[in-house]
Length: 287
Image (tube, rainbow, N blue to C red; front, side):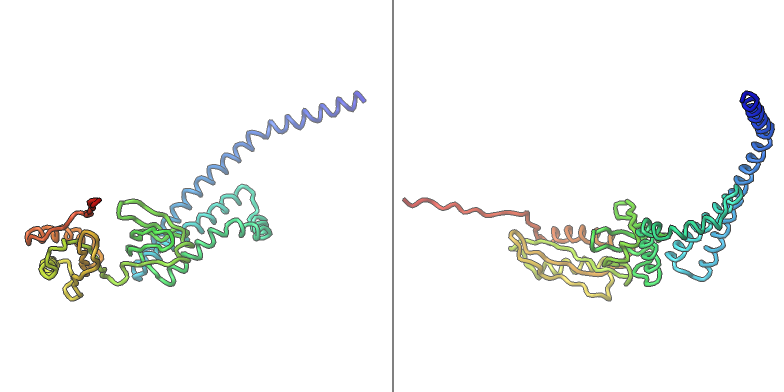
């Protein structure tokens, strides 16, 4: 028994000694693999950038929609990086065929786990095919009220820039399954401004004054109807609705400017804009 134990200990020492002798060579080979992997990764990223650049230029020469360009760019980027990672992993002895087989066998579980992302991807494809909006369109969602200018249509999400300079990131699946108000598709947008005048003021005079303001503003489209009509007989004022059209890119500045000019014009014509008020009549006790 003692001889056998001594033989086992000598064998273990021999194995350990052999391992220690081979360790520098293994570490060197592993270090070389790591360096090669880093080199392949750096070269691969440059190739991916070059391919994306060529793709963008080709789409630009073909006058492709900006949203299509952004979507395809993000899709190609994701696919090529996945292929690059598989290529580097195979250099460390990972069998790509085994990985593909494993992913195939777990396809149902993976599909359930990423069904939200797949829905967003499908939504992005529908947006590009049906074109309910494009990049630089101003849209508003009916379900949650998000609105803004479309800046990017990516693989899974669409980015909106709001008027107060915030960025709203919305899943493409939500955009593809809700009603969308596109305010830029027709190129022109109608503005409605409510102006209250006192009950003592002459409505016809107020209408003439406001129409002159609309005629004098260069941003107002003169070929479209310009209307001033009584919208409501409110508690403290007669509310007039001022309606006209302006180009999308000039809409907000035109609306703000016209609202200000109407105030000046009404003041100059002696037409007051009343404050909210309430008349309270107190009866006297006759007993």
